[in-house]
Image (cartoon, rainbow, N blue to C red; front, side):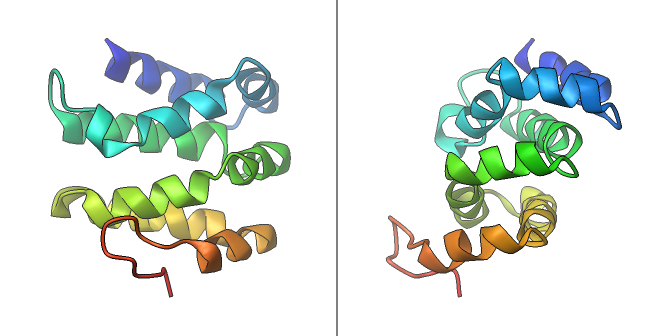
Length: 126
């Protein structure tokens, strides 16, 4: 059900500023961030397809909207994306990396990229 909900939200927000704004105001970006945490996903269903739906929602509802991108940065969404890239399976790596590249086009996101350190291996993003 959650996967389907993210697919619907992604469709509703795709190229619609009004829906993207409403999604941000209702706490949708925090919801995306919380669901990108890979360890919390795999209690039922296929975790990979669920994360694809969440990443699609991130792409449709956040990217391309400056205020939404800034809010995603403020709630440390880049850190969650980097954690996901570090822990996800190979089938999701490219999609997660593409998502990270998209947010790094925002000039304010680079400091978050530089500051990140892995909690598992203590490596940094660079």
